[in-house]
Image (cartoon, rainbow, N blue to C red; front, side):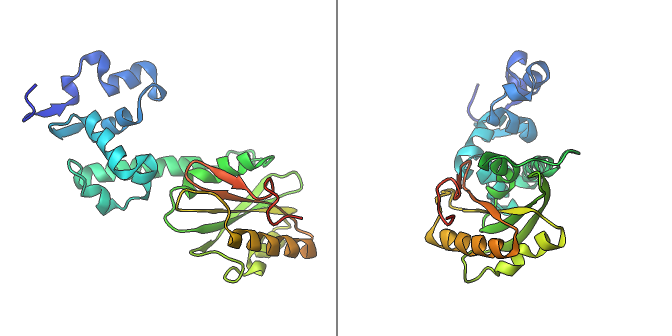
Length: 232
């Protein structure tokens, strides 16, 4: 095919078209670029929709990069524009909302992985540090996720009493603290450890123990409790 032509999904053999493959095999069988191609529908001169999807993943840093990028930044990519950017942003937001919907049975937190599974999808897409507090009942079931702070986090800027306000009001048995590192590296900083120490001490006084502090990066997480950082 001439490189000056616009490649379309219809140029694929029927068995190779993403939409038909999804219908036959299910969405899990498709690559990320193929799933994006279904949203993009058509490519641009010299690229079919799958190739366009693959380029967007490379240029923006994967799905997380598309999630973090602003609408305007996505629009400016060659072959996208407002309509396609809106479709991509809408699809990612639907995924975020689905992940945030809690089932009728309250989630039970039994490990740092449970914490990560609960918050990582949304937190790893944030461009600034955010601090959330997960309130638990006596059976370690989630009562509420309190989204408290955004910006630089340390023991001097975070009001410790604010972390426990909802826990006291809702008779929470314990709390878990979690925050993200926009750099993608979940390695705890000295400030993270100092903040953890302060919250642990306050929790002892209030009889609402901090049972973990989980730092979320890009598809990775670190439990300060497991690393014995900030916990006696």
